[in-house]
Image (cartoon, rainbow, N blue to C red; front, side, top):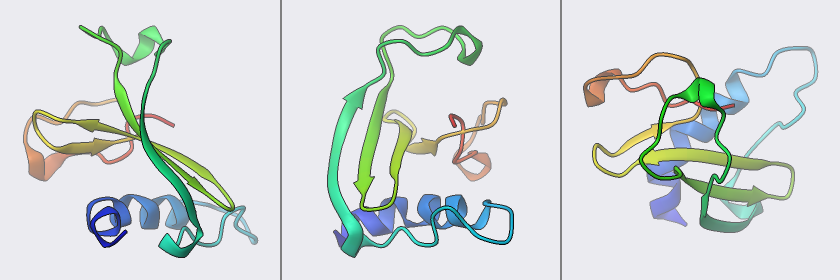
Length: 99
């Protein structure tokens, strides 16, 4: 699980930090609460996300308190999950392309 934390820990931390309100729906995404990690195919991505040569692969993480899907571009090693712009170089990647 250390490799998962090294690769995706910043994504999990940002998801927690971006929650607003007095009480966060998910207070923590710790590796101790990770029940399942696998790769899944998004069969029906919305057209608003652009054209795909094939269905995008997502890393799926099932925690006791949340499910997190992360798009990882294998060619450039980018983690994405939201936002609307596309990054051209690694340093500018937006870790949250899909929400």
